[in-house]
Image (cartoon, rainbow, N blue to C red):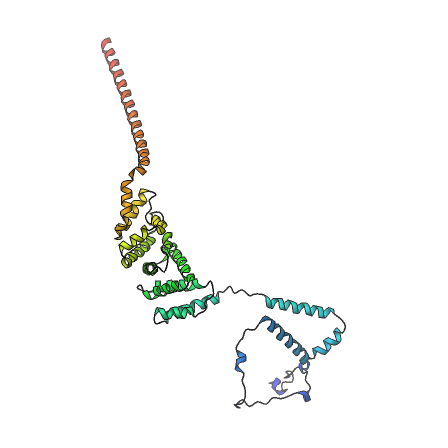
Length: 362
């Protein structure tokens, strides 16, 4: 109440030290907010990126203008006069600002990558058919090195479906045929998926295996990329065996068992054949035969069966060594038993002789 009675004398509207403009120099702007001719310049609220050099120049002009408005320009000129130290310091400051402006800013939040993934996902899910989707993806102007994100997004979208959809596999096939970079990225994605297949659920595992089986069936990917698979009991898990099973069954269903067998027997795929049908040990050979027979592809193991039947002598030395060791152990045990029997016989004979001598003395 006291403050209002004094008419806010202790709280002036403008502080004396801030009242820099004389009353006759003051300009009052009267604006009618309802006037339609007023230009709001709404675009000033939108941020626009500018070049660092342009930003430094505009900042310098604004600093000079602000000094002129506040009356600091004349005083600074009078005080500086002929002193060059202050100008040198200002030049150094300007040089430091220019260096800072030219520094490259690294974004570790990966916001651009997140935006790219969101855009790719929306393009994939909003397309009517695979041809439209591939056309839209190619128009995104994806930078070099970001093709892997598109491949990963297609694999993930296919894995998330309840059942396998050829829509995603057809997109991958078309991308592999159009650009070599996508074929290399899908080959790398296949290796990653096989290494981490134990992390996938059964449904995702099935969809992923059928996705890559489509790429191999259509020759969008070279079959030599399947050489990462080595079919032995030690190098596979239950998840990887299911993955291999679905992959090979899809190949046989789409191409036919005879064509798959011919492809595996051809010289360019010798490494793949050696990994799927190992011949280094009879245990691995039998495991491969049993695996292919169990999944209904026993016809692919005819050569492996013949090799196991025709070359048993290759593994005879190991068996001979094991049999000799067992025979030596049995012979040693028989010798020990015979010696124990002889000692018992001698003890029995000595006891009989002592008994006869005692009877004679009686």
